[in-house]
Length: 106
Image (cartoon, rainbow, N blue to C red; front, side, top):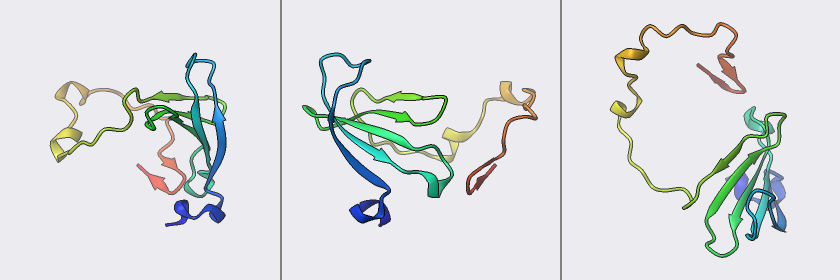
């Protein structure tokens, strides 16, 4: 797997960091290069005490911050989890919404 190979450059360890929005906590920080996948780069933060991933922050202009308080949790999904309710049937589609994201087309 390319991401597991330190020489691939996909994931780089940045050391221990603190975050302005997580006062009093320290994190192991990693930079993730998503350029091969068409997405924005990210910095991912693992809590130094719990060793759980708590934050993922995009490196683009939107700077989206995702917080997973207890780290990623296992889940089992079925096709029914992806069926939209009938109330969504008449929702207009934004024609300006991009339908292609890197290698993924919707």
